[in-house]
Image (cartoon, rainbow, N blue to C red; front, side):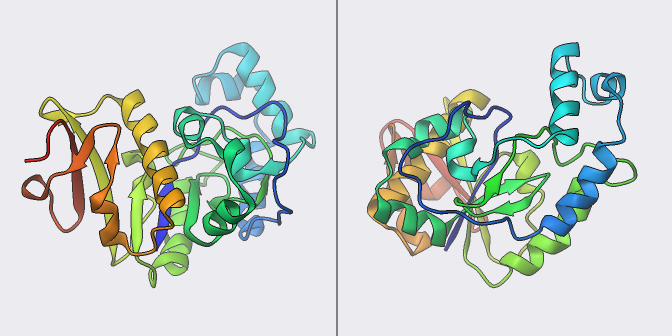
Length: 235
């Protein structure tokens, strides 16, 4: 089983201690194609094309043109899902499980293993890098990488679109009869991923037994492709 998470737009400022030795991401040739196009953008183009503040535009232009400190992907991202995953509390055995079963989708790096070294970036699947669109660029690469795997998608719809494989299940969190608010869904994805790690789950079907902050699997609301976890008592 491979568990897929969305990346985050925010990154840790300092590396975590006791992170195992990492490696180079697998698809750097494709990443360099994107980097080449992004390096051509002026600060004004960053600001208008990506709808950024002047400060963020300058920061992201600098990221593409100047080497940045690299950190292991699972320890680098610091959005809501990753704060709730709490990589800083992983043991060496946890890291080994994560390296085998956890992957992070990325519009810039494609598909990241937890210990892949990454630098901060800003790019979403539908953004433009010159004539390149990350979604179209990565989709066939990820299909080849993941199509033989049993996939559990704990990612936003935006990133789930990068995954076009034959055996994928998406987890959806429902609150009061509707999809959980975005921020809560991110938190729950991180917590579910961490529960999977802590329990060393290797069969996707076993994920349905989890209770994630009061959200439980509801078979009557679910399909083969979408597993619904609803807040409240199990029906």
